[in-house]
Length: 480
Image 1 (cartoon, helix red, strand yellow):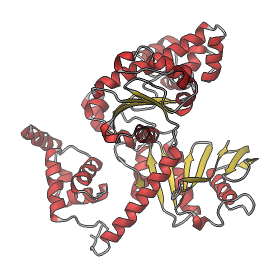
Image 2 (tube, helix red, strand yellow; image 1 turned 60 degrees about the horizontal axis):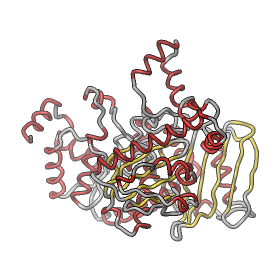
Image 3 (tube, one colour; image 1 turned 30 degrees about the horizontal axis):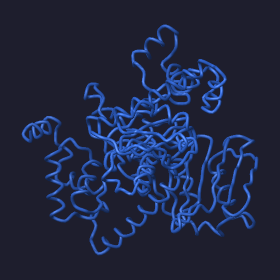
Image 4 (cartoon, one colour; image 1 turned 90 degrees about the vertical axis):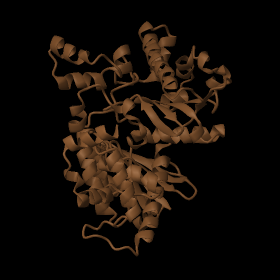
């Protein structure tokens, strides 16, 4: 199966074409500076030299057309026609509470992505644009959305709820969502494979350290804590993001510096972090070099960066009640032996012992203690390709299974009596659960996949979508 993986940004379009049967990359590349007369296409087929072109590309439609024509080029292409592409997998930054897993793109899913624009206004619109352009250019080829937030939907309420008035969560869905989920999930599974222990038997901390940084507690394969929150600003010190701060600083800075809230937001997202601390650069290689040459400011920035990571590793081992492995990934995590060493310094009490020689050589396993420390290159594109293939195969299998069944007027396959009974029990136990949460629980208990649309249909048939909040609260108090 050939799967095209796309990551559409505001002015860039990254792509990789996979043969998922062998998990080979046939070609990859990026279109940068979309919207200008000096856009750059970088294209690298697997068996030929990389090529770079500069040309005018004013929109994503033109960029995607260029990608397809390049993939089919008589000399440099790797396919003969668009029909050779079996599916398209899209990286989508935010799925809110609506998407707990990757999903086949439908009109309903696109509407859900639109609703999540409020959470990721800089990313979701461009992710959605990529989907819509592909619908026009590759009509009939299935598309799958893979959500950065989905992996963290296993967070318990004690982890994802903020201590704000609960009404704000109910009304605005303000909670911890977490990001880099595709990367955390991929490296956790890969680390378990290298260790030789099933993922469901391991407690690990995964550290995605790049220009953007996040850390996750992965307990038996499930994310139970993560450092990024409602937005990617929370948590670790990053290239240009400040990470954790006293929230009262927002109003204090705005008032004392005469700045608008938008200006403070820009300050904390784009002018802080390592760039703000050093006042010269957010490139860790340059910062480390300056520190080695005696710059106290750059040395302090490195110390703050590593201290924050270390603090989270300790906290997350406490959350999980133990620790079997620490995994470093992404640009800094994979390449900086200095950062890895100082993030783990003085953690011997947890069972972490580093082999300096292996660490300096960026080996796969760099530890000698009972807690394994691994350096695992992330591969989010491969993870997206795998998920796209899985979702497509599940959809095809389900279509075959459901074929003899009659559908309702709304196009929903009726549930069996047993499934309805299970859904009723789940609703009575959690009357305030969202449709997607109920669909996930029903999928787990029934052993087959249910969509939010199916669950919503049944609840509407019963009239449960009209039940008052007062009655739901009463039902919960009876259960308690």
